[in-house]
Length: 311
Ligand SMILES: Nc1ncnc2c1ncn2[C@@H]1O[C@H](COP(=O)(O)OP(=O)(O)OP(=O)(O)O)[C@@H](O)[C@H]1O
Ligand SMILES: [Mg+2]
Picture 1 (cartoon, rainbow, N blue to C red):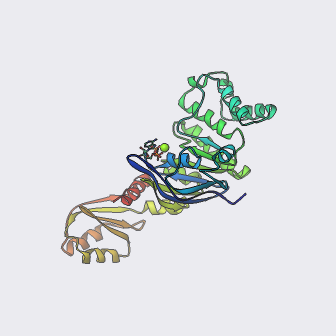
Picture 2: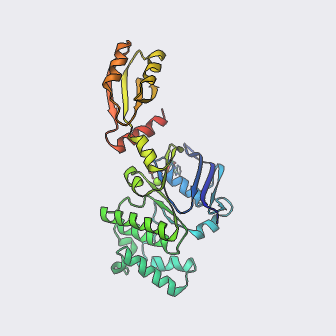
């Protein structure tokens, strides 16, 4: 098998009012946990649906485990497990029968199937509730059941759409541990989506950030985290001439200066101070009305980082 689990080139998907995925080019090696991060509506779920062949791209192409997403989707779906937003459980069937049925249509031989179902259900704390209808399960329990189903046929690649949303803290930690050991022991590749940068930093080997359908940044989470942690100073005011901008850009603690509609956005190095900057601006004749420093929390800094991509 190739060492690339997922490859896309200019993958694009339009809906009537929005370009949900916009020229996405990605290359994800096998055997890693890849985190796909982005705010609501960024295009994460649409990307997964394109990769599973559940949606047709309008442009570009994609390959999963070496198979083309448009012409070989059946072969992809045989080999991957997926936990999607819609859990796809049969509400009237018992928890056990949901798994049994899925195992049967995936041609898992009966004795193996029973063992595997029991193993997964015990592990996920669902075994005692196996005879209850899936429709009567709590949200978190349904999620775990859908996860068991995704793992049942021992796929080599797992797509998980927000796997920890709706899980209690203990279950979320347990799930993260499970994923890590799956990857390390069985060489499974995981493609997961999340809104949660802190979670991504903990478990992902690489992350991609998507915003309005476009890949904003891709890399190791510590690298991206460091970038997101850089404080951002928003200066509202007027009189920011090109000369002043150039001078601010020369200040050693400044990484980047961007002109915005009502002022400036300045990205600083990790420990950068603002007082000196404000002094410089004022002394060169700019009118400074307000100064905001963002970036106290990683989350905040991250949102700012993404917001700037759309300005
Ligand atoms: N079937 C559809 N018909 C029309 N528009 C759609 C459809 N599916 C998705 N979209 C639009 O595509 C964009 C991306 O949606 P998508 O579900 O991929 O986002 P997401 O990143 O998964 O968001 P969330 O974090 O909220 O799950 C959104 O603007 C959404 O409204
Ligand atoms: Mg989604």
